[in-house]
Length: 291
Image (cartoon, rainbow, N blue to C red):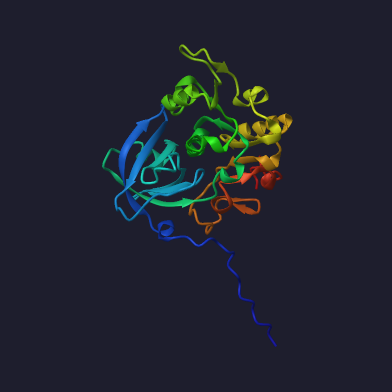
């Protein structure tokens, strides 16, 4: 007598709305060249019934019709959800095409997807933001929200590093943040050029002398993984533990809905369980490319 086959169970996945499966149309309202290879594109939904409400740290799938789609973190203001802002480098077919978009062009958007920076649960703490290069883009919405609710937090410290002064993102905005009395902004470059007279060196070198109280601090990190690995070590030396450190990870996302498995990271699916992870939950896998 044959044993009946067990019915295979599909792994559980979140229930997504229609905007997760089918792109909605967005019109380009502005494109800004941030540096030689990085640009920011601003979008507005074509239909008033669509909106782009999101939490800081989440990402969208941007679709160039007939070419393909890619995941890009949202870098705009959560308080202005109908103005979708994304900053990216022109490094592949889709992003190179996006770099040629003009005002009035239409692309598709799915999302938002993923986890977000846990700003609600961090109220009352010192917030230390460590960003490297284009890693400032996923952290920018968190900065907007921190500034808008400044009284809910103690110190807010931004440590930002770029390759050269010309590679910095959002330079005018950085100057506005530096001018505020209630934000601590420190910027460094790997290599000084032109008339740069600021810090020179790795962004991780700013951590030992940054003004925050480790016993009441939480850290938000985004940038190259090697930078984040050393930033975690520097923060731990200051007394900021893995349970108080969050990172945004980048993996080869394809669907955004935990269906394809392209972005598996150990036991996690980055598009569903991330991209924002608490360090103590991924510590055994972090920095290992084979997982």
